[in-house]
Image 1 (cartoon, rainbow, N blue to C red):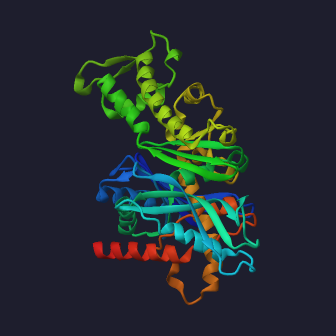
Image 2: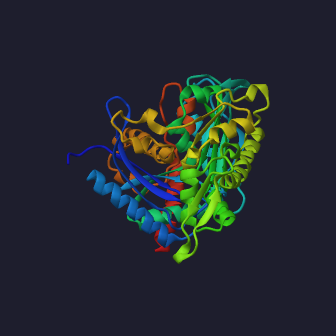
Length: 446
């Protein structure tokens, strides 16, 4: 096969692991070259809790993607989620040495690097520093200060924080599976890249990604990320409830949920019954669909209400912070029947299901355009952006060929949303320190 420039996104989920290989075609759309998926063993609520099983699942997904595409996977972009993720708002400023010179990239880097020095709780590490608005000499609401004059440069930041051990465990699994870690990004950010339009981000939108183990939330307003949260409940808890409530095994509960499940109990009539085969010659069980949807409804309402609390915490009730585009649901859990109607009923906000097909080339398989693959497609988009950003940097620093090897680089998603000229800047010093620490840790652990 001819040498093509391709990138890889790896979604380590609670129920499935997806490796997706793709490249950008001449129209700027993403062409999927290969996809591999495996049952995720060893991940609980978005966090790795069994290294050996996770490594095996990653290898299985990667091998399938390689055999589908005929390509070899080297470096991957990985998503991170889990209940240990939290976000905070932070303001910081720098005083420039020479206010007669215009503000440049270096000043913005200095300001961002300063935020990385924030003192976190023990065991926590900053994952993303996303600039929101800038202030120059007290002049507020500046989206891009480059080229302006000023002595004091201020900015509001959205800072995403996670547990160091969880991040290192993901890195360990990637390395042990024989892969390089190209980038770690927050899963709700990846999903939002895949399913949200720029207009929605401008108008104000909440993305709810309902996965197997966690429900991820990302809120955008004026084209900028405003709030992120990870709620430790997902489709797996609904299956667990069905299993307990109907006294059946997990496999049957999952099938029941997918085939007959509905989030709206009023839909089913009392006489609609499904028969479940008994175990080892036991009598079959009869379950009414009304009861099934009552069980599902109770848990789904709990999940949506928790998400809605987060949306209110952001300040959705304030006129200025109103999310005009409402809610976008994605992830495997968003395929539950009548979920859209229930979300609209509870929150009173317009809702749609988000499919990642907008960024995919026209001839992509229908399966990949499912909400199930939103995070994986978003991670692939992130990998492609990274490649494009790293390419000029690599050419500029010839002789330093080791920069890309297993380096942990954070996706500075904030840059693209803020910069008007589309440039993305490398936050070199902070990334290097982080990557060296991680590499050292992984090497010592062997």
